[in-house]
Amino acid sequence: MKILVLNAGSSSHKLCLYALGHTLPATAPIPAWEAQIDWYPDQAVMEIKTDAGASLEQKVALTSRRDTLSQVLSTLWQGPTQVLKSPHEIDAVGHRVVHGGQTYQASTIVTPEVKAEIDRLKQLAPNHNPANLDGIELMEKLLGQVPQVAVFDTAFHSQMPDAAAIYPGPYDWVNQGIRRYGFHGISHQYCSQRAAQILGRDDLRLIICHLGNGGSLCAVHHGQSIDTTMGFTPLDGLMMGTRSGAVDPGILIYLMRQGYSADQLDHLLNKESGLKGISGISHDLRQISQAAGDQRAQLAQAIYLHRLKSCIGSMLMGLGGVEAVVFTAGIGEHAASIRAAACEAMEFLGLKLDSDKNNNHPVDQDIATVDSAIRVLVIHTQEDWAIAQDCWQILGQH
Image (tube, rainbow, N blue to C red):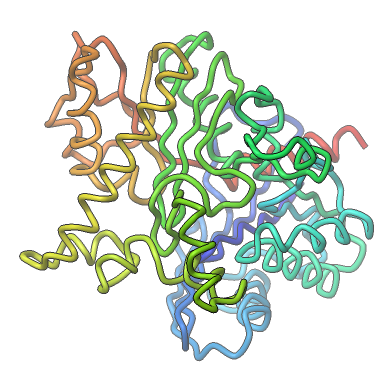
């Protein structure tokens, strides 16, 4: 079975093609073809490679995201990165869909009703759900009736206890569906399962730190999400690349009384805040870290770490202890200094970080010392593989 996976993020779009047999492998296989599109204001940067070693990197002027996506997909069956004779060899398409609301608590085959609900929920995930829906509709255009599966980022958190999920506003909010949904669930679930494999046990209390352009923490107890930092929308929680994370809601009331519209506040909080808003340099922590001596850059990093440590503390109290802390996604996997600073704050718990392992580009590895009371894992998150697995299992049932 050939499964194509589309994973749309806020600043990039990842695509993978998996060729699977009658049984699923125990660990993630290398995709037969994979691509990534990084979005910039006036251009897109495409990087494509195959398991046979062919590669292609290209910058293109940005007309529309759908046109660029279509152009990248065409390299599957033509050009130097061709791995298929035609698009009709694709048996199924899996999509990461950020918001499933209360309607979808598990992956599901895409129908007109599912598309309508994804569209309705775009007001809660305006940076993601429209892109997810675009990908579904483009696949319908290119592939016709090929089965498509929506894999929801909110599903892993759908069984969180009410005490963690319900906001302390008027109870009528519950009836309106205003609650904490949580996001990055595909990544958190994968990392939970991978941590159990690495440590050889599944009775774990985990704090998973998904740190990328978007970021969230998740408290996992025996494989179940019991708390997370994102809420009703992906805006809550940690300081992120361009998102503010949690702020006093009174600030928004104050700004509205000054004349700010809902759209202006949306843009301010989602696009002009976080690392970009404080540093004035970039949303990318790597670029901020290179601005040695710049006071705003230093402040941005200090706030980022302060918020990260505070949220880790919150997850720790909810779990009542922790066996392992997991770092994943772009910053979590590659920023050794962020891992070191976060772990230093947990030394009072008996956590001891092995600095040599931490600084040696670890992948799916325990970087704590042998005598550490808490394990520290760096896991390469495999959202695309998790989506492909769900597709394989759902289509097998049908």
